[in-house]
Every structure is written in C-alpha cells, then in structure tokens.
Length: 64
Figure 1 (cartoon, rainbow, N blue to C red):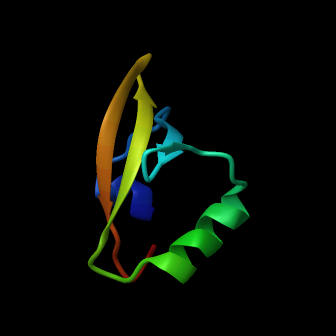
Figure 2: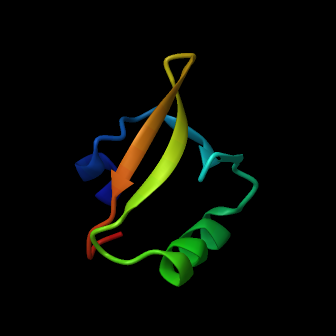
C-alpha cells in the first residue's frame, strides 16, 4: 500500500538503493529502512519501469 501511495506502479522493480545494486530480501530491505531512515526522509531508489531505469525518491511515511 505504501509503495502505491508513493507513486510506484505494479510491475515496477526496485533494482538499486542508495546508488548501489539491491541485494537484499524484502525482510532485509524493511529492516534496513527501520534502522537507517526516519519518517519524512526520502529513500533513493533505482527502478526498472517499462524496461527503462529511473531514479525514484520514496518519501517515507508512518505506514512504510
């Protein structure tokens, strides 16, 4: 739900985070968020959308 509110669409694939390739499970990803970010900060992601790479800054909210 939080991803959809942030603007991510079905089929978007997160391929990077913090300018590095993403090599985390979903559980590790969520733990990384909780340990390193606070509500109101933006998480820099690299997405694969419709076969194109794009930068996306995910604004973190209480529901993330």
